Image (tube, rainbow, N blue to C red; front, side):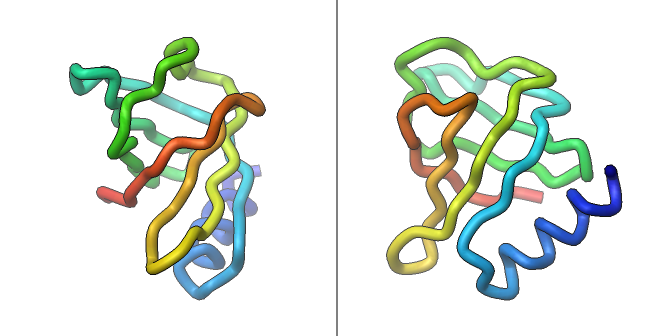
Length: 87
């Protein structure tokens, strides 16, 4: 539900290790980088290129906390790419 997604994003910011969400929007930023909107309205950006398949609406994404305040996003079980929260 929407509420669970919202709570998940709050949890991630409070230090929970990972969330799972559904992609609501995906916009190419060029150079293989993407801005990905989650169903709860959170916006994330990949800070490195996604090389295998473009993210699509409706896909599952898992975002987990990585070293030194960074985050790794894994789309539909693919290779994890570095991400940052942008909104």
